[in-house]
Length: 182
View (cartoon, rainbow, N blue to C red):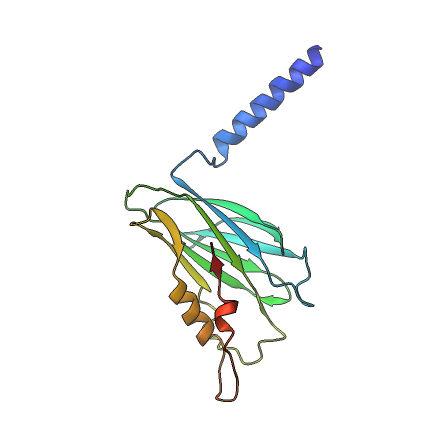
């Protein structure tokens, strides 16, 4: 019985210390970013390991391993600018920009969900390499809605310029490739 009580006390301390050190959902100064990597092909198999680098104001603050077709979650602080960089050995790295500057406006919804697809090295022979260093998507805090939202026109612009399109190519599905959010 004493051992059970000791284990319960240790578990409670660990749980309490984790919530103090880690970001908690109840902290309204944090945004919860949920994402998933969707395109699974011969080059990016289901459950493939991908590396997610988290930059805060252009400084690397964390990196984690995520898996293709598996949801992942990170937490970011308000009033900072973040860049997420996703990499996989068989794909071209992609970045997503998050402008979490609220300017002290009320946060009504602190969650954001996105789906993203990698650009395959095999499929992108005609790539515009000037665009590679730019984020595929840009999310920002909308002061009117009080939530992080995706700048959809930015993603459409990115994907319409990532390929060196000639007149004979039909890229009508570019919008389907763009980063999607809820």
